[in-house]
Length: 428
Image 1 (cartoon, helix red, strand yellow):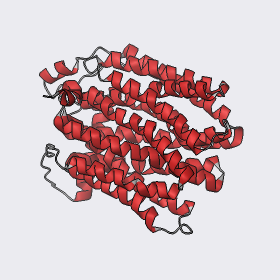
Image 2: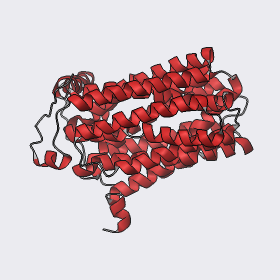
Image 3: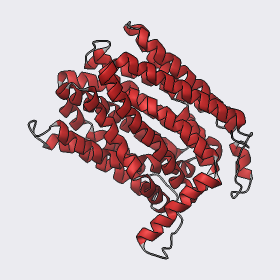
Image 4: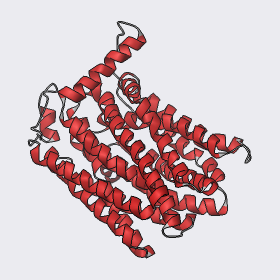
């Protein structure tokens, strides 16, 4: 095995990683372009926040069905199809529409279609990790995938800001279609295990309903730890989704910045996220309790950084705080996904991840809506302070879970134990 392949765990995972680097840069480009277009046309923080709400609705409304699809259908097919759909709806379609027709309302429709494809892609990619790496590498793999998100945040908004300044938001979206096509191409040579054969003994609707009920029963009663983990994730996304959605508004109203400056500051968030993602690749063998403790510490750091942003106006100091914030918010997702991949039977993983996403994305939509209203009514400083308090509450919840959860076997020990063993801790 070469050094390059060793750093990226396996050959197939390396292909996934490089494809996601390109796709996440594209996501970073399109996100700022979408938000800047809406805010430039409407001048309304609340209408700008609708973009974030529309991006979460499919993940909430379709989560149970998506979970069943991920468990039943070939994940490779789902991943390629999702990428190609995203290339069309957020890239090619804006190119075909005239400037007069490309209104905010039309853009909202495209965002919903893009969000449906993304809602399928996320759980399918996460559920495919056990097919790509060994159990002892789950958290490392999730952290490396998150590093692609951070690279997208670092490069995407900066490129988007330059593109908006010299071209237009619409043209930036058009150019972005190629990133999803490249991502889809990277999945073609990958070998993934096929899902277990499913024999339908009743109608498709009844069979899907039974699968959904089976997944819900496992999450609620078979592995209670997941319920507490989902509650922590919900509190986390309630704050972080609102901050990232409204960040262009904060940059324009509080700091009086243009798209290029906002893009560069957003990139600072990605630098912190990248640093913590790389650091998390070393903790796959830690116990669940220790990893949840990392979530508590990082969430507290996020809260402190947000409080600092309320008082700081100097660009350099703001960039430093955003880097610290990026590091703070980067721990939860790789750790949570790694734990779920370790403790969930493969035939239930898609549904377990779907219910986790349902709680997290539902809270994200609530946070975006609530903090969008707060920003419009009371201003950006009040909103950032409230989001900081939300992150401190997330830290407190994670600290309680880490304190009361019994020590669990490490991933290597889990691999040696029976696959039917259920690990349940004592909870407050």
